[in-house]
Structure formats: structure tokens, C-alpha cells
Image (cartoon, rainbow, N blue to C red; front, side, top):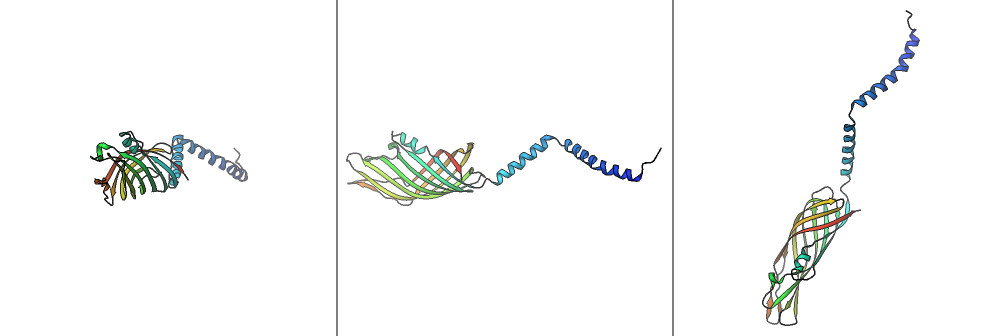
Length: 219
């Protein structure tokens, strides 16, 4: 049997070596399940998306508590809360109008206790995308107005107050969410309202348990 000349043997090695290496790499790639490759791609995409989650947003809450509370006396009530957020810090304006039911605050001479409030709150959300648990505090102006039962007169007072709150933001569809919340407003002054000889003392504090609805837009 004739021996292959050394020159031809070297050429065969050079030609076949790349093909054999590529074939081995292809076999090794086929040994890895496609599920693993897809899972790794999904995890990478998830990590990239979470890295971009802290950003800015504009949103608004609708609080039905003043509406329900006012409806007890067949009156109109509403609370609108626009907010702006940078990462985990949220700044919220609370503009509300409602009536406290006569069964709660009416006296012998006064009834129809209407409230207007304007408050600014600073909140911290613990989630990564404007969601999760939140805590906050704020301050604002609380305006009381009551009417005398027998005279066509009303009395009004304006008091500063501070508020503390806590809750949870749960997104049920994209940028739509619900927000169960507890809050307490504490008046910083006590002013007695009077019409002629009759007097009315507004509540020193007010609490709220509510379920807000909201939405936001990324900016």
C-alpha cells in the first residue's frame, strides 16, 4: 500500500479541520434544548426591561369616597388627584368637595356641613414601576361651611391640616390600577363657627378608608 505524500496529507488536514470543527460546534449547539435558549432570552429581555422601569410619569386618581359620603345626604361629592412621579417619589394634588352626613355632625341649630379641601402630598412607592406599597404625608387647606337651621345664614372657616396615608397600588391592566388606601387628616387649628348666638365646632380630625381608581402615562 502506497503511503500518502506528506504534502498531500498536510493539505487534507488543513481542508478537513475547519469542517470538522464546525460540525462539532453544530452538534454541541443541537445538544442544548431550545427551551433553555428561549428561557435565557426571555430572562435577558426581562432584566433589560426592569432596568428601565424607574422613570417619570403623569397620572390621576379618582377617589369615590367623597361621592359615596355625599350621596348619603343626596349631595354631590368628588375627589380628583393628579400626580407626577420621578422613580419612587410621587407628588400628588388632592382637590375634593363633599358633604359630611347630617347624621354624623348635625346639631340642634346647624346642618349641611360642606367641605372643600386642597392638599399637596409627597408619597413613596416601593414597587419598581409606580406600584406596590406606598406611604406618604402632606399638608393642605380645609374649608368648613355649615348652615343654620332656622336662619338663612351660613358660617365658614378655613383651617390648615396635615395628613398621613398608606396604601397599595395594584395594576390590573397595563397602566390602569386600583389603590386601596387609608388616610388621616389632622387639623392644626380649632375654630368655632357661629351664627348669632349659636355655635358649631368642626371635627378636629377626619379619616378615610377608600379604594381609588387611576391611570398614568410614561413621560
